[in-house]
Figure 1 (cartoon, rainbow, N blue to C red):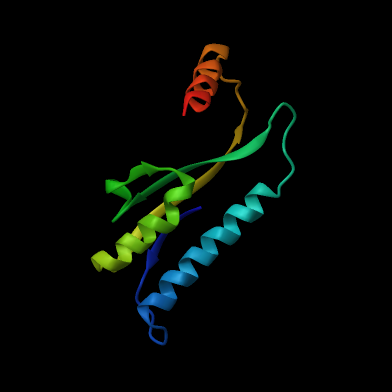
Figure 2: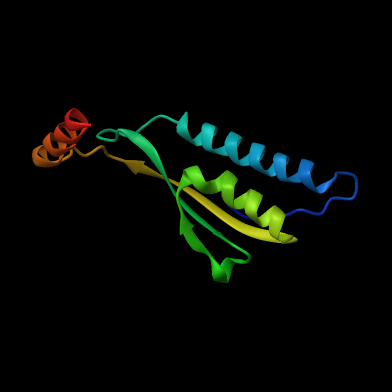
Length: 109
């Protein structure tokens, strides 16, 4: 999904429009995650970009989408660009040394 969202609406107030945008994105992500996975794929991952316009986009994590939309609302932006693209993801195991160090730290605390 590549889309430029607008906070202005003739009949809705700005906070309701922001909530509607968040809901639309949540629905899109849920729909993409429910699609059948190809073989040798563990989950659907997402590449996300956010910015005031398409040229000035920065990469963000999918969990930061609601936060950046709220920030755009409080900053008073009229429009913003958001790109959310699904991609196949594969889980990787952490190195054994790293896991042992974390367990040791938790044990000492």
